[in-house]
Amino acid sequence: MRVLAAMSGGVDSAVAAARAVEAGHDVTGVHLALSAKPGTLRTGSRGCCTIEDSHDARRAADLLDIPFYVWDFAERFTEEVVETFVGEYAAGRTPNPCVTCNEKIKFEALLEKAVALGFDAVCTGHYARLVLVDDAPELRRSADEGKDQSYVLASLTPEQLRHAMFPLGGSRKPEVRAEAERRGLPVASKPDSHDICFIPDGDTKSFLDDRIGQSPGELVDAETGAVLGHHTGVHGFTVGQRKGLGIDAPAPDGRPRYVLSLEPVSGTVTVGSAEELKVDRIDADRPIWPDGRPLAGPTECVAQVRAHGGTAPAVAEC
Image 1 (cartoon, rainbow, N blue to C red):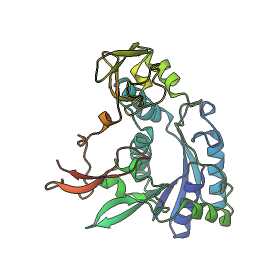
Image 2: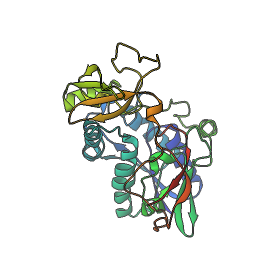
Image 3: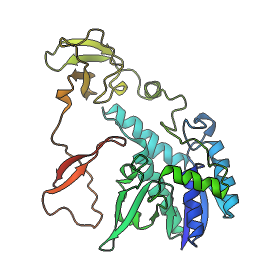
Image 4: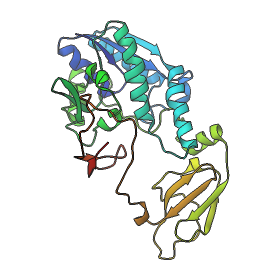
């Protein structure tokens, strides 16, 4: 099988590519250039997709003796990921850019090009598993619960999953690092990337201020309606936030306040107690059915609402 290995420059994608080679596939490595000015992206463990990462990916490909290319997806990344990120914050929502990147870049733009060039699958270093259920691909959690990335892949369609390979799904991160060391891969001890790769200094609020602009508003108590403070833009907050609210006085009961809701038109940030954050219903859109068939009725399941959050028992229905 002809396999295109997406090589970020980290240890996970390098080992995934090595396993694809070892499995007998005809593998080609590719690194995605996602910034027109890669020097503005963080280096080391504070991001990904830098010039340093492209060099690391090339060295790993050389060691594996596979062809290697760099594909420029900077324009599409800006449009699909960065601009969407800014737009979601302006609308009072808190996006996860990694979900958008996986959906729109790695498994839409990249996969489209790969298939057009005759590749059968795209191989990545994601910690997730794929199994076939009635000939339909089903995404499942990784064996390493601490590194599981099925959450950020949940928006992939069945057709995209048919052309995906996740060789690390059954492994744990320490095993992957040990394997990289045994194989002599130069990225064996490279730190994991984290945070948002396209925000150079990690200051999300300043990044958004520059693109959205400041729009003053009020912090309002949900119970009394009292104005507790002022802010320079709802994009500086997220539902569930406790720290950095800019409220001087504590709640009457001494307990912390949390952001309950954001209203970008009026600029109102409503705050209240932890109890008021609790919900028993979530309405979602864009359902994806791995087997192509919607739910026939209420179905018991577990729900996860953020990448590093836990799961909760739920009932799904459409």
